[in-house]
Image (cartoon, rainbow, N blue to C red):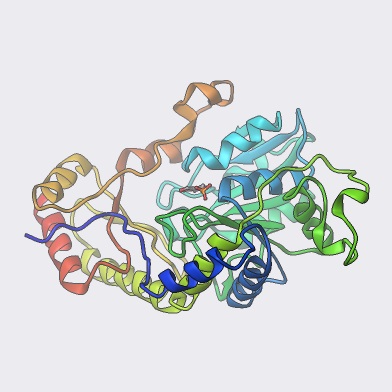
Length: 367
Ligand SMILES: Cc1ncc(COP(=O)(O)O)c(C=O)c1O
């Protein structure tokens, strides 16, 4: 019986030679490979400002800081995510205000926003969950009306498109993850994209001790220039970028396979009693990091899948139940509904059509 993991690291064999070459090139820190990687990713995502960083978590930290979030500011964010989305806000001393999420998508509900925006609100944080897309049209319009920054956590959505628009070209800041089990990996790593130059300059400087390397004249030492921002040490390095550059040659194929698999699940599971599908906008290109279903008999489905060697999981339990966020607790009926039913199924490049038919049949028997 073939077992099917929920995640698998993609590592094409030609990475080996490329990594060896960089390893002995005499340059391992942030250098020519990172610059080439930024250019390659920028072209692929259609983004004007693209900053490779050491992780998505650091990308979010830098984005929040560059967005001007300071102690006491209120930030609206989602509890249905990895804690990586939200702990950087606590580090900055911001007050987390939970948005309710749509019961049928698990993503920030635009209809929940107006009533929680106050004079202290600084930004809205949005997650494109599991490779599906949040409702950006409404969220961007509300943010604009209230002069709020929008930061998108796109850890699960490298290469996704919202109504034809590339993720990374909409909100003020978008953060992608290149961690081991993401669509494209550099081992650990991340990317920040910005939609205006001032944000880019600030984020780029914050990434490396507050110094914007791109603005430092050739032949001068960075340390001889003034530092006016309290920065981080969060650059990507050339070894990681080398892995990323090889991975990028496969990006179209990886994303197409995730997308095709997700669409097949949608076709096979439509109308199955006991299973609800995510409510998706037409015209999106989803990257389905995993394929999420909603089911009241989630535990029975999980057990039936596990009995046949198939992994499934609730990947990120709701954040608002953790002690570190206890002061932000409030009633969130959409989150209650979604988190009681969500289940992630394997959907990546390693899953084929027969696997999905097999998984769908098990679900039909156990839902
Ligand atoms: C939604 C979300 N945001 C952020 C992160 C953090 O990514 P990284 O490990 O690159 O810091 C993750 C990690 O899986 C994630 O799932």
